[in-house]
Length: 129
Image (cartoon, rainbow, N blue to C red; front, top):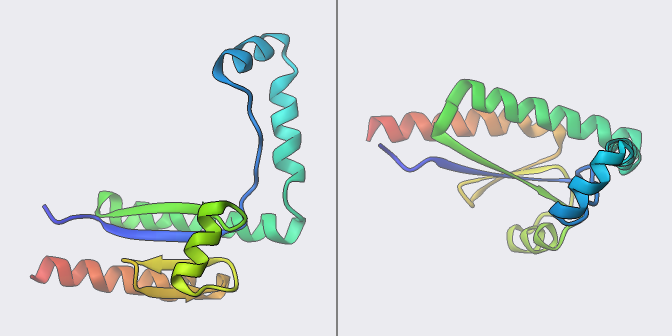
């Protein structure tokens, strides 16, 4: 079996902060923490970025539906330290961005179809070899 194709998605992602596992369990018993986390996720991004993140999420689900375990997708929050590092590494200045196999870069929501086509082409080439 071939090594799965690596796909990295850099995007602004909703964020919620959690306590340690023990504290989360204790707080969840009060019934309040679930609502706090929901509220954090709802307010963590402006509406346009939340809509964009939903489109990316739908795209990732479709990639898995079509290619199953032949791809590994890693979604990286562009505002995180890792996101900052990856944006420097790949020379990305706008988000969302998709990087396929550490080489092919696709910038912007409108390039998701091009990224899908590149993934399909690379996977077809893997089978042919």
